[in-house]
Amino acid sequence: MALNSEEKLDVCMDFVVHREILDSINENALSDDVVNELAEFFKVFGDAARLRILHALSMAEMCVCDLCEFLGMNQSAVSHQLKVLRQSRLIKYRREGRNVYYSLDDEHIQQIFEVGLKHIMEK
Amino acid sequence: MALNSEEKLDVCMDFVVHREILDSINENALSDDVVNELAEFFKVFGDAARLRILHALSMAEMCVCDLCEFLGMNQSAVSHQLKVLRQSRLIKYRREGRNVYYSLDDEHIQQIFEVGLKHIMEK
DNA sequence: TCAAAATATGAATATATGTTCATATGTTGA
DNA sequence: TCAACATATGAACATATATTCATATTTTGA
Image 1 (tube, chains in turn green, brown, yellow, blue):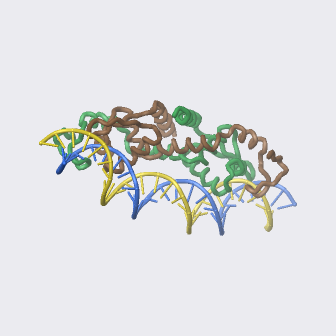
Image 2 (tube, rainbow over the protein chains, first blue to last red):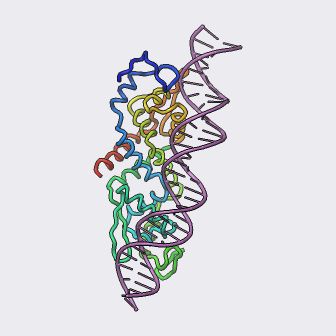
């Protein structure tokens, strides 16, 4: 298990450069499960249409038809994106007659936007 | 420009359901530029390998070879991912002899991780 | 009960993204 | 100057993702 700096590795051509650093980083590494869940979570924010939906819903509950008009996208595309957001548990919905009203279901979304905006503003 | 609730729209089959809400949301909508930049920014976090790189670099400066070993990925794949992170200005590098050392270049990365972790832990 | 509206969804297609392979570039020590 | 190492990168390929199209489901009002 524990390699020392004398052992060969197949990753690079020669020796690993900093064994001590690697050991300490491996100790504190996130589990595969956590990393994969995190990636899935952020992936959802990596699409302009979904961001616009989330941002709109942070201001008001909206039905699908409202969102189609706001986004300028057809109903099917919007519904597909809403499904992605639902499955990531970022939004929730309620039915009222023929309409389905969507709203945010995560109090961190605002923070996510803030951090992202800080990054793009400062750079 | 300003539609009232009597006018037809091609997005849905009939009338927009909530004109007032749409108007106020349109007023506060993010610009296309900002939304696209935000999406590009979050897209970078939407990959497990890049998350692991960022998380590792939050603990220590590392050379490419270290990262290959840590990730169990080949050198080319790692370099390609480092390029993505560089271009998003999330990491910086310095050369020291034959090695190139990478480190974080954005003080918001920690916060991004925290918010993401909160989400996956709570749900 | 039936037609029309609002929404959801599967399949197909187009596009974006990640990895690999081969090779180029930059650096060092002999 | 040259060989070997560390890293970067273009092209090809495989996979993932977004959108469209057609159609299914749910609900309401007549």
